[in-house]
Amino acid sequence: MAERFPAEFFTDLERLTFELRRLAAVQGEGRAAIAGAEAQREFTGHTPYVQGADPRHIDWNAYGRLGKLFLKQFAAERESVLTLVPDLSRSMDSGEPTRLDVALRMVAVFAALALRGGADVALVLGQRVQRFSGAQKFSQVIDALRNAKAEGDTFFSKLGQAVTSAPLRNVIVISDLMEPPEHGRALQALGHNLTLIGLLSPDELSPSMDGALTFIDVEDSARVSLELGESERAMYREELDAHLRGWQEFCARQRWTFGLCSSVTPLSELFISKLAPLGVVRWGS
Image (tube, rainbow, N blue to C red; front, side, top):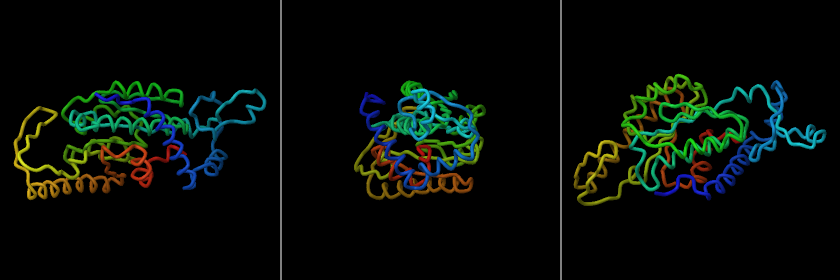
């Protein structure tokens, strides 16, 4: 089984977060925006600088006096929370790489951007909600994600039981969307500022198989044998398009952001080409 967070992931993460911050600056959310926002926010104190923290928040006056690096904190920063909710149902634990591993790597990138940008992270894993503050807690986020396992047959229908104690704002949900769109009503408890990211494998998005095939349900091990030809693929695509359109329309009615990604898209391309245009990586600013 492939390592969920190999050493090269962290090397790539540094390059990716740097590039996402650069994009944020180009889009007007960089130094000038932060300087203007800080001027309007209540200064609440300092926190020691940790490797990986956003250098734009360093108090250079304090460094001149004390010879040590400190980060400025403001009231708005302490109140800012990004809530991350990956789907841990058993259907996620399939594919190569598994959708579960890809989803948790995406969560790690979002968490790194938020923590380094001064926001807290609320991580919802199954029925457990954990909150992390400060860039130095990123290793604890990785530990939690590394130990996360797929379990249960459903995700959305059980989600309401776990989120009553989670912050109800700035929510990103990542799922394979195997449940019908009406199950998305469970997400309404998470508030209005929500992004739903659908994560599907290439064979799900565009099946290319021919001939006699046996499909195995990863959740209950049920087996179904089918003869798959062009007409069956066309019917599948119609059903998939209707299913995804149902999710997209549901999100639109809630005024939520909806995005669809392939599980084999490299993380850098996924974030820069797919997610950044949706406006959901602003946590790097």
